[in-house]
Image (cartoon, rainbow, N blue to C red; front, side, top):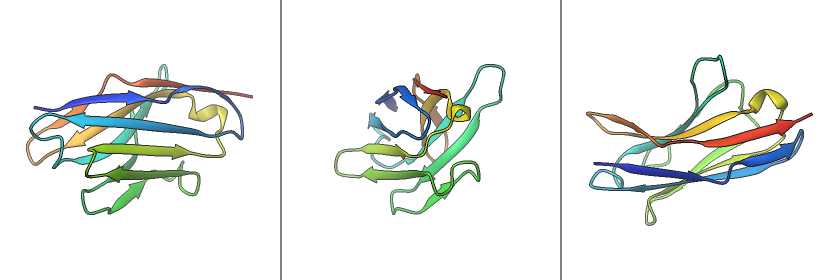
Length: 115
């Protein structure tokens, strides 16, 4: 019902920035709440940020003040602007789409922050 494709990951130095993009498609792609999660090797998956279709946002404490989530409803796109990156931000970042019935995840994009 939903397909999610992430892009924008890569290698950056500590203190740098990256902008991740998520393209949502399928029947529910235009109505779901969108978000980003991340998972580092050997660590549990952490929900980083969420945004509803109306623009209400939430952030994990670890990224508040540094990351900003946004969406373009006309294009069914979500974005994650990541500033002041730290080595501990290194992880695979996954796009999430939530409906009343299901949670969908993309395949992820690698973000590596060097010190």
